[in-house]
Image 1 (spheres, rainbow, N blue to C red):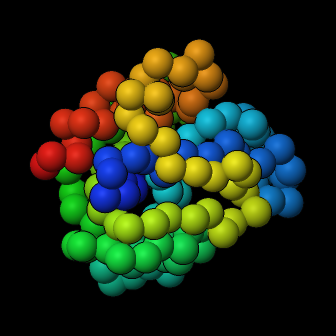
Image 2: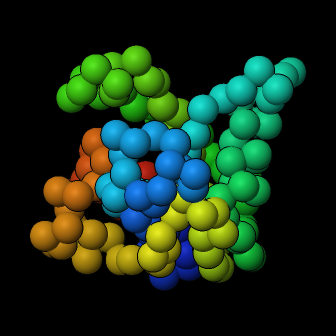
Length: 143
């Protein structure tokens, strides 16, 4: 899971598509989400994590002016639903001048301030991992 910040500390967020052709995880249709995430594949060998992370970033977003490579800042596990309990996440941060969603699986991608994310009534529409991360965004940006 790569959380992307711009120089003003805003975070990239978007709504997941409702179309099976654009996004196959029907249980996540229409949820809001933070950053870029996805499964590691056998084809990502031999450096599974790094290659999987780079692949997902290339597939999902266009980024400009990054000041560093993605940085591992933590892990995430949730048990809210059965599907959550069989996924383990590595959390990365990336600081860039601009982020733009390019995948059909992302709708309404934009950069949002952490304060707006925390205060928004849309907060409950975020998928589980993003809801967990929202409360930690300022801390993660500083790591």
